[in-house]
Length: 241
Image 1: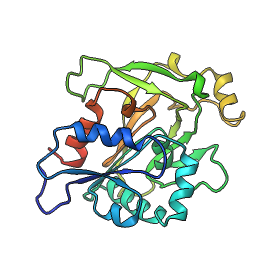
Image 2: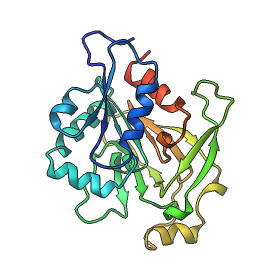
Image 3: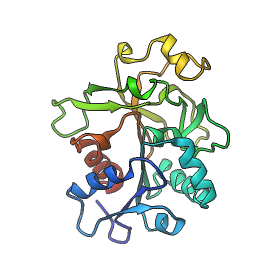
């Protein structure tokens, strides 16, 4: 259960991307009494937060804006606390997933990530905007789990591989959802999407995973009326109900 001494504020990183949609969903949930949702653009706003969502958008732009605004190091510390379950929780969607990965294939010049989750990821490997798609997922941990979750993939990153935890104190990466390999881009499209730099990796079918109290999805839950993933993250990782 939530400890009264802890902040009940959930932040949504609002440097770029679909942050407004996440805010709207969070405010529609039945959160504990006293809980609030804010947009986060500064270190002082981040300090108020118990949890943070890093939204979809453009990962390089988010990284550069964070660097210029003095947000990168505070974000790294916040993410590190979440990875070790030290009173913080983080959820990264699409571009947020890229920022949270330890290694990024195809990163642009000037990009610096948050080094949160022990995985290697390929940015935008699902293809261009016109190749966006939706796919029903079976997620056993959600309420009404017999009802498929309609996941929306837009210029989505692809997990290449999980990598060993960086130190003995780091929790293992837990795969929550995989998709059929038939859903993945063809080897040709996968290579074209990243300029021929990378083929599909051994864990390319992973679309939802966690490490400690960090959750990542390659799809956009904020673009569907289904609020179950946000609700599950809040109950399981943020407020520990």
